[in-house]
Length: 177
Image (cartoon, rainbow, N blue to C red):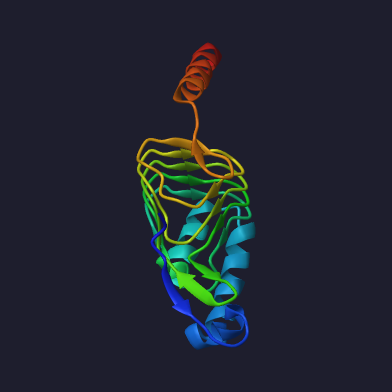
């Protein structure tokens, strides 16, 4: 279950209430920094932007792929542990504006986590250490440490298939060296 704090609104849909919750100037400032980081090919520069300009907690040796889109309005609610990889064009959200309410929730991605390309991570989820999220997944609930998950809706995938694939990669790597 996602850990999202919900705030009801009256009148127009919740997105019309956004500037009651976050300054428009913060949104513009963050948008500029996020766009710079999305296209930046230098991992250390990206991590510096995330830590110092956006207030995210990012561990050492974490790698954000090209075009990763972090939450524009609440990036400070995102934590990524050491040595994790966030795949190309992944979206990490810490907010959701719906019709009658909006919700905010921290996103915690553990250490040594692999997030495949084009994944969407919704607010209020925790992805445990050593987990692998397959490309294109929608992470709408917590992921246990060491789990291999994917799909929409998110589900645990076969560990034997993952183990066999990993063994094949190791054997191929050994032949190359």
